[in-house]
Length: 118
Image: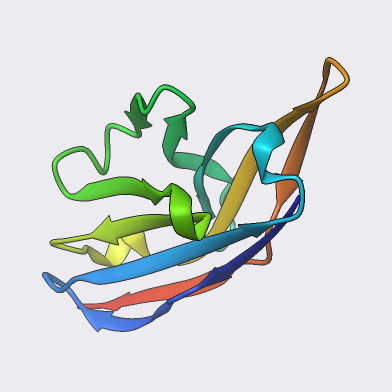
């Protein structure tokens, strides 16, 4: 499985942005897929994750503002980010959990930078 993230950029506080993650390869093996972020000087943290049953988990800091969705026909996961705040500034990474021969693999895409100006 390979992941390609896109859609980052610069936006003013209160604005919106959507990032996308295109999965390729053995996408049938993916059991969950989502987004993490890492701000300068901080640890990488979970932002949102969608499971194979379409259940989604969100970090408390983004609940009500961010929405994760999946287009299975396009093998793409989206993260719609509304009412962005300067503290949302980070590199956003796409992550997928894939199970192959009963072994779980964590796959990371390249990051995409989101900058929220005040």
